Image (cartoon, rainbow, N blue to C red; front, top):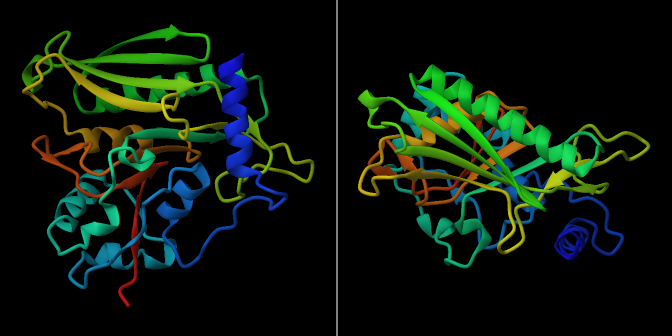
Length: 280
């Protein structure tokens, strides 16, 4: 109970403020930056200026807050690789290790005020189904297990395919989902289901130092990265509702199996949200 009380207090301090109401969408910032601001993990993050030689599809997404639909995820991932080579100012994304934005996070605003434990289980079931669907599409078999603790649940999904470097026991995708709190003052752009009665959303908070919802890849062979982690996460995201977000911290996720994705992005509902702004 003590942990839950501290957790709810943090949410209250984070999103309600002194009668200031919900956070408003900042139209001069990227959608990604607005999302992490609403989630409370903005910290040292800022938008980087878009290089003039960035892919045209990324430039064309400026009016949408630099959000790009990953309907053809292979094309979107190819653009991510290209973006890393076009002259970014990476200082915008150079984070200290203690920054909350320096770690991978999972956060969600579930659009219904239901029992907290039921909300956790519902989210875990959605994550399991989406991960299984993505893994099967990529040619992997899966087996899942759930461990329930007093204030969080751990979903472990083993991914196997001998021919792709994932023999049994080698590749595991993990989710840690903490009990959410009901947030009445969540911004409309992340909790659009609110009505005049202010139903609010169940918020899975990524903010506390140690007790935050997150995801991780685990490999028995520490010298091997058999999964393209960004591709895998992108495909999982496409199978999830758009109120569930993956925050990919810089230099924490493998792109093309051998190269770390050096820029932060936010994935949700099959969309890639970039921390970009128009060049001045």
